Image (cartoon, rainbow, N blue to C red; front, side, top):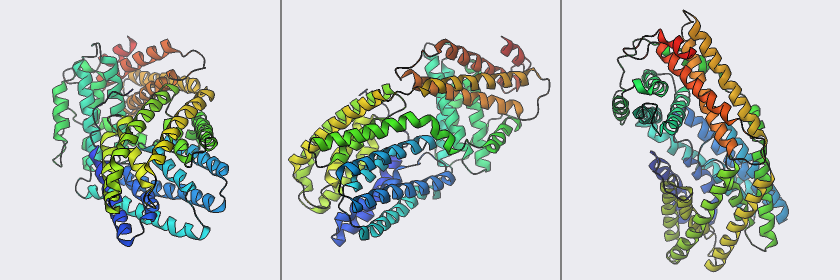
Amino acid sequence: MLRLGRPSDIWFKPALSVIAAVAPPNLVLLALGRLDLAMYTMAGSLCALYAHNRPYAARARILAWVVLGMTAGLAVALLAAALTDDTVVLVTVGALLAAAQKTVCDATRLGPPANVVLTFISSAALFTPQTPGQVPGHLALALAAGAWAWLIGMAPGLLRPHGPERRATAHALNTAASHAATGGTGDDHARTRAAAAAAVHAAWQTLLTARATQSRRALERLVVRAEIALAAPADTDPARLRDWARDLRGTGPVPRPDDLVDDDELLGVEAELSTGRPPLWLRLGPLAPIAARTALGCALAGYASLALGIGRPYWALVTAASLYQANLTLTWSRGIQRVVGNLVGVLAFAALVPLAHLAQVALVLICLALNFGAEALISRNYWLGSVCVTPMALLITEFAQVQDPGRLITERLVDTLVGAVVGFVAAVAVTNRRAGDRLGHALTAVERAREQAARLLAEPHPAPGALESARRGLAAALVDLRATADAASGEWWQRALPEERVVAAEQSGHRTLAATVRRQGLLLGRDASTGAEDVRR
């Protein structure tokens, strides 16, 4: 649980973006002597953490929705704080907001930092003294800072307008090369195949949200090559894939594979663009158990903190909200990581607080450094990022007035333990029986996609693009099956999972993928007529 992994390829982007988004508003407020308003500007500034892996056309929309969502949550919290001082009511509102934020972020696949930052801001605002007349001005500050964060998020597009698509394609090529190096038969081939399938699927999702340009078309060709390597690793040269991935760095021309002589294999892209995604309300339904866990766990954690006489129950609420992952096993792991990170972070706060008390400018600079550190480290392991997040959250409370460090440390430790224990108990209490149902649906989707591809393989002359569309549909269904099976295997108190059927569906699905590749003649030196024979085997 605590092992450190490799940092994200783009760890520096959110780290630098949050500094650029947070520093100017905070320094302006410092100069005006109104650092007590920093919480409202930070609500908007922290939106700069989102959507760094998205193409700029999609990023513009996503960041705008994040800013609006952050402001909406802040508005509800500030209105609640202005209308009542009943702490039980405020905790209840915070728990419901946390559940809504978690559900929408998961349904839309917003990506990190997902709902945690949104919940942190709205929960803290619930316990900030407020009057109705102050709410519009505070929301205006958040929106202004959010607009600045939007500009920060979009600015790199001026230099590398296709940077996110190139990085996603390079990652797909590199992971496909790792799988090809196993020859499809090595001891580690199952893990590398799952990683490559997920990377290829992510690359397609990235390209499908980018503008249609010649650069995107060239990148699509490379993702097709990565997909071919996934389907037929023994027939792929890993070094060639890695060379293409390396050539995608910077702003040079996109490599063009010379063995793909026409664009028929890309007709499936237009087919997928025309189908669209299921409506949001359909994606929200399967997340009902996770929403119930979040609402119940956050509420009970807040109530327990109140019962213990802690002055900041929102810390326990946010701790509980941060735990909930795709299944119970991952939630347990996140709980351990959260507790360890917060305990070490409290020690870091004890060391930093004397420096922060020297001057307000020191307080602001230390918080900026911790912002950078949190984003630089959190991709290696969640607990390591929490080591920076915890002292930063404690120091932010001193923007309005100097606090007693001993009391802050004690309250944070108690709230962390309360939130982690109560939150996990709530996760155990609310079972996710739907995980098994979703696995059944995913199995059915793979079997149908495989049958569709097999029917096209049996036709002498399938419609242009039909086989490619079927192949990519099967690949996406296999990725979803693996993710759904992993999530279901980490739940408890449910019927036995059809593990043998999952393995059989994955094996036959990947054999069919290889057959479609050969039928399309995408492998040099191979007989395209072997595709139907492969799928029959």
